[in-house]
Length: 213
Image (cartoon, rainbow, N blue to C red; front, side, top):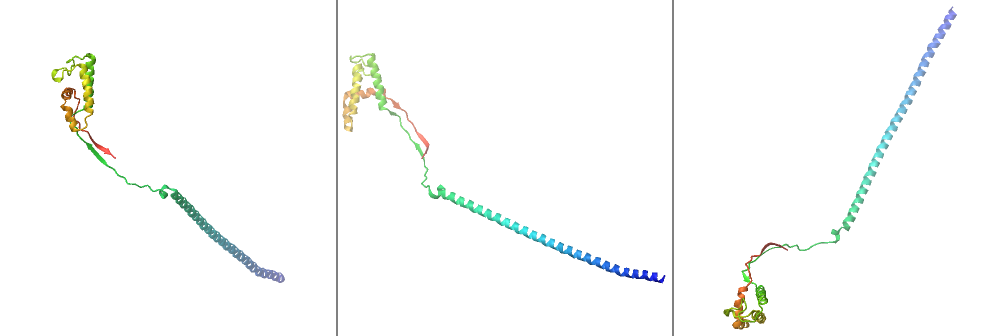
């Protein structure tokens, strides 16, 4: 009985000694695993930080490249603008001058006068019509110069007298010649007779206040 009890007691003692050792071994293994996991976690953190740093560096590099590209593009654009300016007309062509503007006002006045050419044309037309209506050399047959105070002319004589009067008047070039011409009784009578055929031009006031130059 005692022997059996001793055996059981010995077994119990041995078991009590073995259990703490096993528990201690389990705790040590757990600590080792925790330390290993801590190291792995720290390594992962370091890797994450490294990746973040690399990503930030890459972003900075991208920004630098973009800025450089924009700068190069800007420089290229400036170069193109400079070339275009160099080819522009303003670089080699100068336009200048003296610009002047003037506004003139034109006005005047003419008095009533006798148009000599129109007067002679009128009397010639009338005398020709009188001659063709009554071609005669009989004195006093002219409707216009047949009266004694007008010269008592025939239709033929009045027409030829007008032609001679016109030719002689064209020869007058001086004041003395004009006096001599009018001193001729025939010419003086013709002047008085022609007065009835005078073509007058009425007075006129031309005005233009918008002449620009």
